[in-house]
Image 1: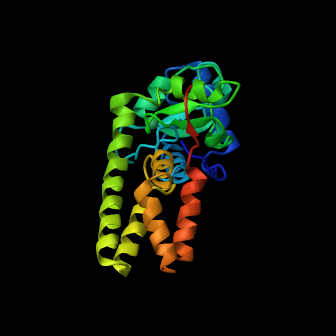
Image 2: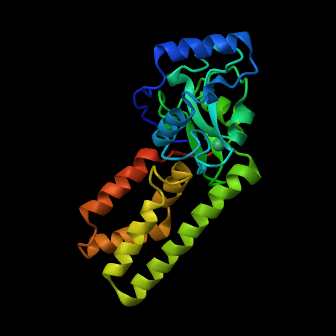
Image 3: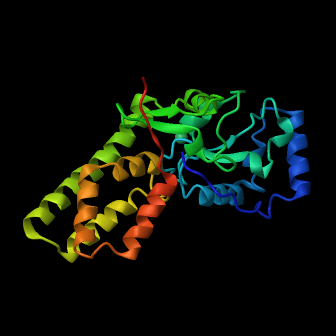
Length: 251
Ligand SMILES: [Zn+2]
């Protein structure tokens, strides 16, 4: 989960449309009023722009054409029917996260209003396992409610994507040790950093692992020594830091 910036409400979701759809929903709770043809496309487009095409919660990549892209009601529509088409209450989510979260009532992290890093950290022993870190248990509520540590559906995909990056880092580090500096090596590290930025799937977990990786540090130090650590690389690293979690050691 990473911090998201919400743009203005799509113009199609006017007050009149909102009131009409909210009334229709009040009459019949089985109506998917948020999928009304009047607003469906602009609403989904705006939500997916906000998350850069990802699930707002687990950060998996959402295929716009797929049925798996759902609109999640942050405050459940069952208990907050007046928020059923309220722009600020809507997030794009994968079907899995939407179903898991469902009518969960306790406070969880709102990626538009909270900094997820203030509530969630990464476990040092299992580098793909999210842990709640705040005293009020908001982070823990979040990982529990949405099952953000589901092994098959969330942790393994995170691990596969990170491991692919880690292996490439090792190769670059070895190549640099052998051949010395070459521009193509710097380009390769730039590409790998790009896979850990907010646009990428599972960016928070991948960026946290990348920043802590021995080979990454070795490559960075090598480039610095050679005077080849550019402003662009520095900016990419800052972007990774902006989405990364803290490491948590459980005692
Ligand atoms: Zn998800």
